[in-house]
Structures are given as C-alpha cells and as structure tokens.
Length: 257
Image 1 (cartoon, rainbow, N blue to C red):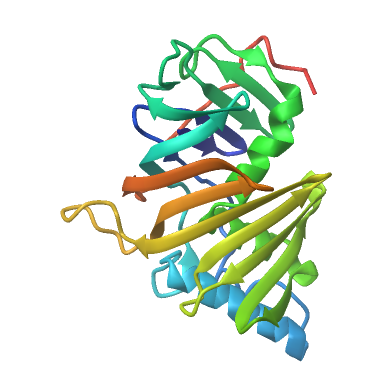
Image 2 (cartoon, rainbow, N blue to C red):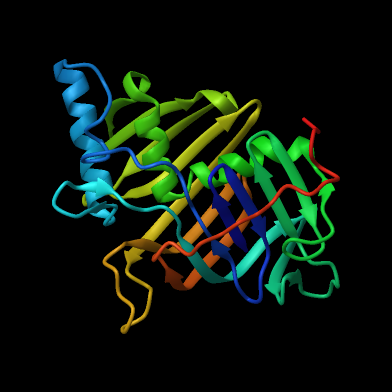
C-alpha cells in the first residue's frame, strides 16, 4: 500500500507484496510536543509526554529539535480487507484479482485511480476514513496530538500512559496507549459509529544497513474493527528520507465535495 501526501494531498494504494505509506504533515516547531497546551501542570505534562513521544521515534532533528518528518514510505507483506474480503497483497492488487487499488485523499476530496496518477474517479464518501488512517500512523498521531493543543489530555491506565485528543476536522476521537519507551503501541480511533484499534510492535530503523536514519517505525501492524482484522502487516523496509510526492487532483474530481 502506498500512501502519499504533498502539501495537503494524500494518496493511498495497494502495492507489490508491498504496502508503502508516506506521511507528510506540518512540522510543529521546536520540540514538536512543546508547542501547545496551557502553562499549567497538566499542560506541561502533556507537552513533555508529546515531546518524549516524538523524540522516541526520531522525529526531532538538528540542535533546535525541530520535527523534520515530512514524509515516510514503507513496504510490508501481509493481508488486508478489501471490499469486505481478506486478501493477500500482490502486485498492486489482491491475489486472484486483476483490479489494482490506488486510493487517494486530499483535504475533503477522495478518488480512486486505475494506476498512480491515472484513471481518477470520485470517491468522496471515503475521504474521512482515508484521512483518519494516515493520522493514526505513529508520526501522524503525534502530529495530530500536537495540533489538538489544549484538547490533548494525558492519563494513566493499568500502568500505561494514555494520550487522548480529538481530530476536529474529522469529528473523530483518538486514544493512544504508549509503551515504556514512549512509543505508540495502540491507537483506538472513533469516528461516528466506527471504532478502529491499531497495534504497533517492534519499532526499529528498517531503512537498510547502508541507509539508516534513526527514525523508528513499527515492524508489525495489526488493525481491527470489533473482532474483524482488517490489516495484518509485517514491514520489510522503510524510506524515511522524505521522498518528493505530488498527487494532483484529477479533472473528474475537482469541485466535488
């Protein structure tokens, strides 16, 4: 699966035994997690937790500790649910099907393509769900928590640190469970009547021995809705060096909500 965004444009599609995600969202400034929240003990706690989360996966760069994660690309093997059916990802299509899946979202627009950049047809109803998928990836979730400002809250459950916040643009609520290293091990998102639980495990730098960046990404990703597993992926490699991605809105989609 490939997800891409440049500016305010995201794209999503299925790939050759491969799922590649590109996350590009605005930098939060010094310390990433130090930019928002009130000057209260609770606000300071939230700032520190968000800072630790960003620092733990290598989002903060240079002497000013600026969030420099503009995009992220990963490849994985595994299964996903497509059109209600579980399938193995092979050659930009599900095993046994000739149909490629390239799904794109930009702001409140969504569309499907027959191949990247071609054959765009509107899919407006899918925009929020596709956007939420991106905002609940580890780096995206940290950025969204920072964007929530004073609405982000920190608590403790069963000895784990919990970060909760709304994503106002999607009318969604998100709850993050952190591990002992301040990395996200579970994301629970609620949008409308749909609750999705995503677990992340085995963080590491998977760029390859000659391309290491010290940006951490989970090797294992499992996503469930109720008792149904909608994705079970094992990451084989990443590219965290911010590849340039442009996904123009097709003429057939422009002007559609």
